[in-house]
Image 1 (cartoon, rainbow, N blue to C red):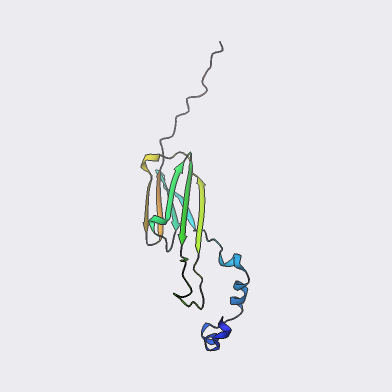
Image 2: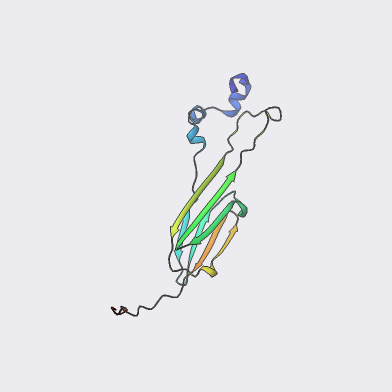
Amino acid sequence: MRSLLPMLDDFFMDDGWDSFFDNAPAMRNCITVPRVDIEDKKDHYEVVADFPGFTKDQIHVSYERGVLTLEAHKDNSKETNDKDKNFIRKERYASDFRRQFAVRGIKENGIKAALHDGVLTITLPKAEPEIDKGPTHIAIE
């Protein structure tokens, strides 16, 4: 399409990367996974994950059986009719991802999460450690 608009070639400065990505649809739809830090803060764990451009409605956090799950879905691609718009270039896409972390010994009713400026912070309070009473004797009948 750009060859039909020669005056725009200099404006968009095709340096060879455009044709590389145009010929590799998998690269255009690649999934990016947010960076995650997990820190032990003695009485709780703090999980910090980068979610730039996501809203809290697009992020789902769950904890089940010792596994913390972070999921997100973002759909930037909107179906448009060619009569409505005349795109020269369109790179917006939809993406899904899911990450899981084994974090055991958590007090489930105290878990909190907050999203501020694209950074998700999850606080996982530690449960009281179980005292090892030693082996339990089981009588044989």
